[in-house]
Length: 180
Length: 158
Image (spheres, each protein chain N blue to C red):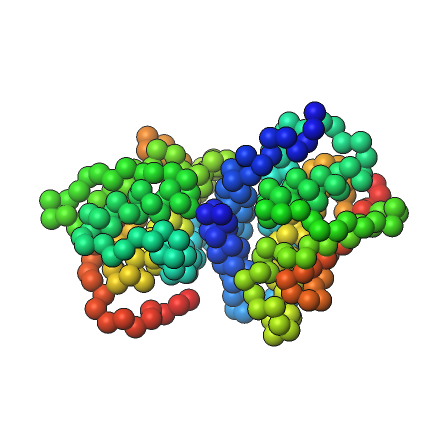
């Protein structure tokens, strides 16, 4: 069998494995470096934030998505364009609050946890917390302050992974936020 | 590639994190490099297992190295190694003329001293990959002109 044959078509997939495994190595390192899960969660969120504030530029440049008119449109863009583009999945947008300022992203599958099992002694670890930071950071750069957190996680035995996003306010002044 | 931007950002954060935590504690440059290298090692081990799942058995060491230069490199960095040299005594030099993780840095001399940070993870990646194929090695990297770099693989005889 020649080795070259089926490799080119698969290459994109491989790249996501690289990402998944690298992320795993990072979380492992954090768990070694910090005493408790809370600290790890916080650090992951912070790193995600740093990624988000940069990723948004890449996103806007490549997706050619224009300004969103309301939060519903933002939700759709995040789910159908952003997640698709970077993680290759399309979460569904549901559970809108009556005021329309809060919704859930339901992830059928989460590429970050492809090879992951949580050991018992890390029950409060939010493994994919990086994603929250990414969303928060990216939206902050387009003048939206949001609160993002994991409501459900398959790693912890839930049926689906649910990210809850809440709109807090529109950021008026356009000053660059503290880049950590 | 879409995933790639994400990986590059993550890789940058990895470096930032390791070096930031070194500022607080007492950790010198070498320890940071080792830490990054170790992370890469683990990832390399995992990747090579998946990449070689359907391949035929390797003939010899050179065959393994060729696989790393072609398939492994293409899967990870979207291009092949540009030049592979060996002294046939256990030393291989892999040259990449446009190394992916350096392309975002200026090509001038300005950031040359920071280049090793951006290569440590990949050194580990290669070492981990080789280790899982039964080849024990030491991998180092050097940059003289960005974004080209050379990885030197020294095979450790068992």
